[in-house]
Length: 364
Image (cartoon, rainbow, N blue to C red):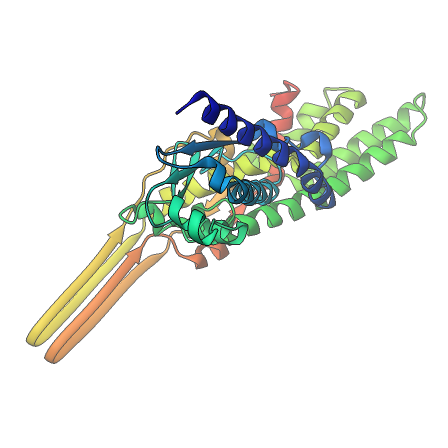
């Protein structure tokens, strides 16, 4: 590629970063409405990078205008991606780079590897028809798992791995609702403490014992393995106030909630792998065809103690079939994760956030 082409592609890359920067106000406004503080939102241009890669024989001048539209569509996709994950990073299928490739062939395609999403465009379709992948088409392709190889079992499980999918969206919403509710209770405790005369020892002690009772009603001490009263009765009121501030933050910290969601995903996989499936098929007839597919995917992440605050009931599948006749055909596709699993999932956010706050203050 000539020096002139390199300069032009660099100018397009600079343009892409500027478009990303321009979308930050949209991200902040949306996430602020979700009670995510601006200080916790990472800017688009600091997380994502858009690269331009042109194959030989591609005339940049002829497609420059349409290429800018593609850059804008990619930036909009990343904006919506960033909003969906609450301005944080997710350890599963986080996008860091988007490479826009223009090639001499006749179809568009998506692929994903190691944090890089490749958007492959047909030079001839761009040149003749002015075609590119709009924001909506990018979303549709991503949500359908078209960036994954057709042979990959992950494509079958994409409904719960997808950072933009309904499963993770509902988890975020439920966790946020739970955290916000308890954060309100903590805020009342802090407000009550602020009204106490600092010299009134009796009021301070009454507040301390009352605050401990509230915490014990929220937190599962058996799972925590700690008696909160024993810890805080040995401390002064200021220590408990510091803990409450930390606890309130952890209950609604978007990055921490994403960590819990990632732990949920791996826990689902591990629990489902222990399920019992019973297949009992009896067939009688002239032609019999049987087919049973089982897809398992192994994901390995380390989430420390978070997993002990997740409860997931494994399902048991029992399939019985008796077939008789001239032609018998049966098919069983047992993909190990189903949407109904959400109903048997319990997340003890309150206790998990409590443990994190105790560790932050070195109280355990």
